[in-house]
Structure formats: C-alpha cells, structure tokens
Length: 253
Length: 116
Image (cartoon, rainbow over all chains, first blue to last red; front, side, top):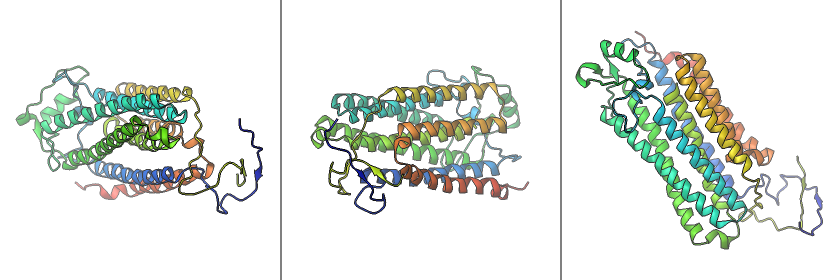
C-alpha cells in the first residue's frame, strides 16, 4: 500500500470540487444514455403488451401462439421445436456477456492480453447471436410475415391440428388451406422490437471491434487505464438485459 | 454517507478527466452470476414445457426476468459496487417511469380491447 497518510476530509459530497458519484464523466453519460434507452425499450414492450392484450378473445384474428410460430431449429426442418432456438440464442448472449465482464475485469488488472482474448470471444459470440437472429427473421419472412402483413392466422381445421402438436412432432402447414391473415401488429411488432434490439447488438459489435483494435495497438496501455472497456461493457450488458425481457415477453409468454 | 474518508493528497480533482482507480473484485462472482443466469434460463425452459399457459406461469416468467435483470445490472454492470447516490440515480427514475407505463397498461389496458 502507499505510504500516504489517510486524512479524513469532511467536505460535504455536493459542495463541489469532487465527483459525488465517484465515476468518470464518460461512464456517467453512458449510464444516462442506457437509462433513456431503457425507457425506449420499455415503451416498446408495454406497447406490445397493450396491443397483444387488445386482441385477446378476438373471434376472427386471435393473437397467434408464439409456440406455433417460432418452432424452428436449423437442421430440423418441419419438426415442432418451440423455444429451443431462442434458448440457444439466450445462451449465446449470456456467454458473450460473461466474457465481456471478464474483459472488464482483465482491464482492471491492466492485463492487455486477457482483455484482447475475452473481447475477441465476445465479438464472436455477439456475431453468432446476430446470425441466429438473421436465420429466425428469414424463417419468419419465408412463412409470409411482413411489416404490414401476417399470415399466422389459422383456419379452424389448422387450429385443431395445432392444438394436438407435441414436441418433436412433424408439422407441415399448407399455406393455402391452413393459413389466413392474422393480426398485423404481431408481425410488425416482432420486426420492430427484435429489429431494434438486433440493431443495438450490431452497433455493440461495431463499438467492440473499434475498442478491440485500439486495445490491439496498445492505446489503453499507453493511457494507463481501461475505462473504455468498462463503458463498452455497460452497453453490451444492457443489450443482454433487454434480451432477457424480449425473450420473456415474445417467446415465453 | 455524506462524508468521504479518502486520501486527499492523492490527486487534484479535474471533473473532465477524473477517472477513479479501478479495483478488480476477482472472477469468482462473475462466474457465479453466469451460472445463476444459465440456471434461471433452464428453469424457464422446464416451466415452459411443464406448465400449461396461464397467468400464474406468466407472472413466474416475469419475476424470473426481474431476478435475471437484478444480477445483470448489479454484478455485470457493476452497479451494486457504486456509491449509493449513483445506484439511486439509476434505479429510481427507471422504476418510476417504467412503473408508470406498466401501471397505465394494467389500469387502462381494457380501453384498448376490441368490442365484438
């Protein structure tokens, strides 16, 4: 430890001349940005809840059951596997989150090599998540969902068929006989909310790559601190946090 | 809480460039939180197939989401190690505004129902 003597300073926290929150300017601003972003996402999710609720008990176009819509898994075409693929996406994002926080921790120890290693893993897993989302979008679009169109309404016979579906059952929907137009907001809200989240993941990856290149050239070693990793880390964990709620409201409920 | 116990000889305070000295808490807790998050997701997954769709199940899922959020924000985003003022500045507005939206949804959501 240092040889300085510890002096108790009795100046009040808010009298000026010190940082009341004991965080740097940049980190505080990142927190405030994330707070505003949290309001944006909560508005979107509450709006989703309100619109979904307004369709409950609708006789013509009831809200589609997510289990019947998001039931694909790569390599298992036509097999009824609800929730499996999104759970895999969640796992990927949790792993990327823990490697990000390990990079932050390595930055606290000023260990440039570990920072680089963990950031690279984070970038790879983040890209994997984006790839998964692209695959899911292409499935969804392939089955007739558009921003202003949704073919996930079921005819009476198709609904009866869907009611008996069990895990691993083979399912084939006849687009002409089984499908009718469903509630349009189902598709548009899916595209808007997961798209907005995916855009956050994408920009997170871009920022991660920029910071990775900086770290590669020793910028933070020269600067003497790894605050930038912490700021990117905050953003990345926020993206994970939003996914927790998107996962809950879109796929689980 | 209102007074500081720190070495005032350490450095001059310049707001724009002030960076608090970072301290590593080790990786043990981080991995712990990882396993907790993974565990909760697995439990979500089991409940999804074990229970039929119901309001109880929805409430369980939302509560589990909030628990996950607590661990992500607290440990991964390092918030629980920050000053108490800092924690309140982030958590209180979030609770107030998101709570207001959720209250509005629950209280006035019926008005959006389509009449048949």
